[in-house]
Length: 241
Length: 276
Image 1: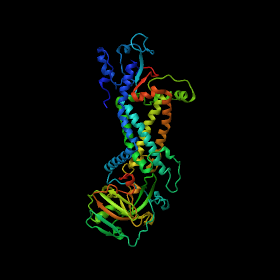
Image 2 (image 1 turned 90 degrees about the horizontal axis):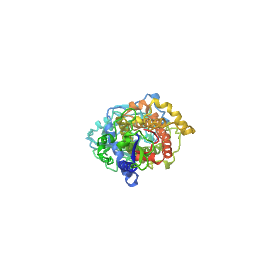
Image 3 (image 1 turned 90 degrees about the vertical axis):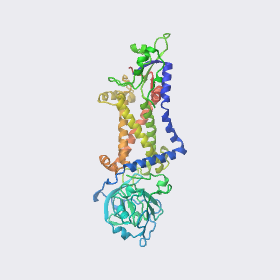
Image 4 (image 1 turned 45 degrees about the vertical axis):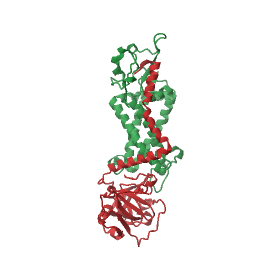
């Protein structure tokens, strides 16, 4: 609607209205390199917090029929450093530590003695690609029950034979599709996919699926600069799907 | 951020007192015209709208002006513009990590986005920007839409079926040097089409973004877009839509000059080209 006012009034009105926009200028702090790094890191922590709150511990990720699974050759090998850390599969044991009643060394046979779960699920990489794979293993929750872990604790930390390390929230660890995976495509895990044991959780991004597991620790506290190999460099810690 | 306060009103005579409430925007929407009314001079408002300022010598010279953009629209516009810039540039950086919509093996790269056009430095940094500004982007979009609906201000910009026949004459004017259709209202049909489309693109970005961020938690939404894999393409498509809109928008802003641009900062447009 057109109105008519004298020039001075229009200028005064315009100035006042312009000043009211000033709060938007606060976003300018993101242009300061020294501050922006910390701000966006805080933004990711906030997003992780909401992701944690949104996570439905019993909601299953989509599963697929065998015909939808990508051929084994098309399931990428991905590693941060060496693809085969040359684990001595004969002597390998899984070290269990922390808030558990039965800490110690566990053999692969002990893991495999637990109920076996086979599932075809989508593996999603933080880079953007995804592939439907076939995985077999035992539920993390079953294993934690075996070692009588305190599942009321906050986190599960894992260390790997290749110095990779990860930590996940207990709710995701206890998810019914979260596996200690020792098989892919019906075959024992090959070395480059993380033999003899890796994590496989269809509710987490690929970088959370640590390979060549060496140690599992149940804990209530994470060291701030030791929450995960990529997370310590800026990836989202929750990494949930 | 109070929307308005009484001090905004220029000091007028006492007889103008009863006009004050009506003078503060947002005015209640009446009939088909949703633009805010601010009547400063009671005596001139009563006159049948002269196009030229009042004759010289008789009081102050009057300028035609319109309060086009309420504060909520201006704030959300600029927060959205900043967020969109960050979302596109960081998004392109994320895309660089896997510039394809096919399988990982064999990987066929679609295009190589120059690093200079991206934000974040590396994938992790770009994700941090993306996962921070998605909140600003969504918040500004939701507040904008809510304000448009609640205030009724959307009537100035929402593309309706009756605007369809005005699109071609306007396009012919812009792109083929056709005659300029007479201006009616704040936005012409082509503008309405463009602005309304961006709301659709924003909704598509948000919904597909939710699927990419949480495909397992929102599996029903992923299903709606044809699964995680396809959704990544839809998300990219929405960005392409914005990339098609932005240059056109900026060129039009440049062509229409300072007064038009300044109105998105101050709300007021001096000498608008339309009547009423």
